[in-house]
Length: 555
Image (cartoon, rainbow, N blue to C red; front, side, top):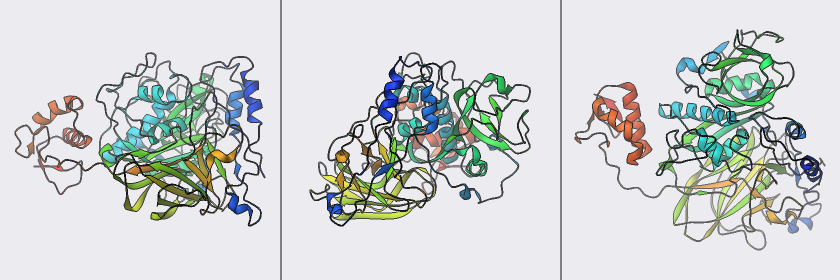
């Protein structure tokens, strides 16, 4: 059985550890846990009980932590764990020798992070802005300030971060907000405008680890989906300003978050063993590099180790309550054996009479087989579930965050419990179940009895709190439930900008509306329509049969 180690707290970027703290944390890490844990006493009678195991902490994070007392770090912190990706998935299309998302207008404007270690937030928001443009036809200017001040992890706003922090923020629907709602003031905190609204709800995101050697896989994603938030090791000595190129044979430098926006197979960077480079968007202003971008050699030794892409979003009015116990996302990966399922269950209490229409969780590896179900009531005293209300199954082709639509909505009643069960199975790894756990100095996660349960067979479940090992007293499973929105009032067909209510919009009507729509507290649907019209010009009429935001058509 592999060794199982307690995860370590991450140190803030550019913050020095107090003497002796690192030694204490290393001692904590070496405490084994989970060894010999049986998920249900009922299984012990039938023979050897399955052993629950966990994957050790990411060595890159340990290396980063070892220097935390003596070295000032940059703005990107290595992840605590790796996702598992299948390079074979990249063989789907013939890719061009050069591809640049800017050529199709799919990259949002370059911004400037200043002296704050917030590069990771700018990279994440850039990927998110690109997805919103692809889905809804316009670029929002999203607030990095809100992300760095409200991520909830235990380090300061300019202390750095990573894709996993951004994913947790988005998956709990903590944002994004517009820049005008919370302008970039990293030194003075978040000042969210009263009445500001979350602009999009995350439904799906792809995660890549150890991806510097998976060039074709990342190219395929860029070509089919859009920008990727990623990391690199930056040192000024390895940047060639004459050619806007970067190459370092090793991994020297500081952690830095950037956005991949394309590639050029013919681009040669001085010193690199071969031609080929990523086209990268930076966050040091449009006056730096090539209008804010640069080339990063495919062969750079310390770059593109972790990537995140935003695949799918929903408008906020598409969903109601989000049921969840994991605001900090996945911290730990556990399971039983390769190609053996691991079952997790969360018991939620309905906040009101409503319908559960979707579930959400994370896949640790590509090609993970899943089942997802909703059951009546809570887990019973004997470890069994109540009556099955809805069930579905499938394959998560890509590692990352996924929303699963149920075959039909499930009605739940206010104050009554319901249980969501998800199973994960993968042929190449055993640690398939995503777990949130508290880590001193890193994640202040909390959990209570009666929330999360584990099982090796899906028949008998045990309390997650009964693992009984130090450091795992408060774990929760990363499973969410999404409710339908409340029945809405009939939407008034004339657009709010249609001041004379004649079913026709002119540019003269749209311009003042766009300038003040946020203060009017109107829905994103109306705002998207107005921005679409403004972008294309002309006069428009409303056609209720045409999907949004193109519901207003040229006259």
